[in-house]
Amino acid sequence: MIDTTDLTPAPDQLADAWRRIARNSPAQQADPLVMQCASGLAADPGGKHAHVWVAGLVALSGYLAWRPERAAEEAALAALRAAAKELGGRPCEHEEHPYEAQVGLLEDDIWTFDTGLLTTADEQVLCPVNVAGWARVAVDVIAPFTVRRIPVGAPEHHRSYIRTLSGIVNDYPYCDPHEVLTDEAEDHPYLPTRGELAGYLVTMNATCWYATSERITDRGVLDAMIEGIEKAVSLLDDRPCTHAPGEHPDTGDPDWTNQVGYLLRSPGGRAEISEYDGWDEKDEEGEADQEYEPLDAWVCPEFLHDLAEKTLVELKSGLAAYETA
Figure 1 (cartoon, rainbow, N blue to C red):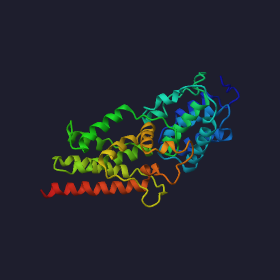
Figure 2: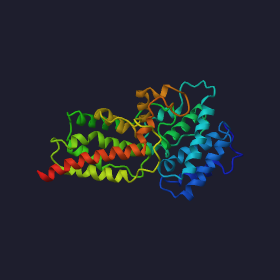
Figure 3: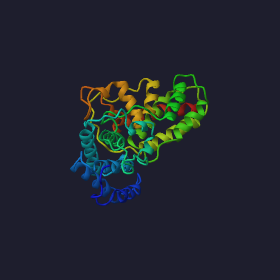
Figure 4: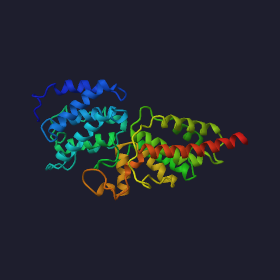
């Protein structure tokens, strides 16, 4: 068992403080805790207290995935990446690790999940490779597609939504498309992570052609989609685009775009996109090589603004057809 008796405050006191932080907590409340974890981890990313600070940044990743102060976000990401690199390369005799079994977690569940890093003496839980795994998961929640070796596996009910919407975008719906598309539009994310917000806007784009076709006879579907997109766009942050011309994703295939729309919404789902692209095999650690498709372009605010505008143009054109009919 790792001895943390010399850690002040004690881990249970730290955990109590972390649990009081919500996604929309004010920076003056959340940032000192983030910086405490990031500083502790950065000072010794492979040390005996690394699992405590990783546990803290996992617990605080909900705040860090929404609207953190940029300095807190950058400090947390740098510390987590250093820990993933340092701990992930340690020798290990375990065939599997507990974090790998949690790939089906919803993004919203990750920061409330008990990683066990503070509550057990189990050697597999405290194995450096397992701690490194949780560090990578936290990085992916905060900054999607900037870390490798996330276990593949989208939440099962996301797969169910993909199957349902696939029937619609391929023009063989096996349910009422009016109801499904309205439900999708009205389920716009509240305080979303970057992955959740991107996934919603991508899904709206994948399905807009069907919504504007003669197959949809209720203009309320288009009204709901337009309202949802406009609300979602208002939540996009102001990060500058870092991509070269032509590096934003091609959304010309509605079926693939539909799949991406839900895969974007969880670490395990994003790992599937990486696996399809072959990106996860190209390097063990670090950021994507520039010669390969930058998958983080899927969550680029400029790309999403442009995609939303194109989707709105199509939907409003379809709405105008109802008004002149």
